[in-house]
Length: 144
Image 1 (tube, rainbow, N blue to C red):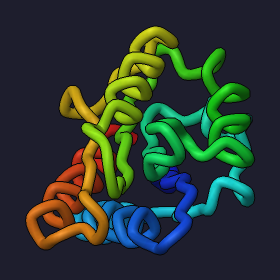
Image 2 (tube, rainbow, N blue to C red):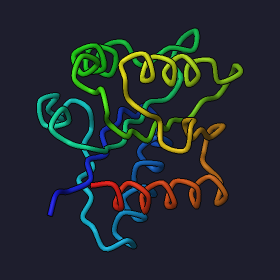
Image 3 (cartoon, rainbow, N blue to C red):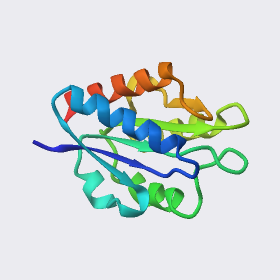
């Protein structure tokens, strides 16, 4: 059985916590999760998966983290058509524009964002967000 890959970048630990909640949902569904910081992930591996999760907090003026996550995403974009992707991340300011931009980018590349939108948390994710993330993990497990 394939592992559900959950790739993320986290600066303060909030997005890492969100990745962990997705992994809990994957495990609850009877599948195995592979949680990877983006600097340990392989673009080619994700291009071979049917479904996976990507997480990144809002940075700067509501963009993806620019040193690791943005280059990873650029390398991934041309190989995600037809994939199912859970997007997630935390933010501390703004109106979640970075997530809407990321959702559009995924759609333009021919992939589908699971449940139609990314999952966000303002700073530390509360229990409601964590449960939504666990649900997303269960969904991902059903898609692999």
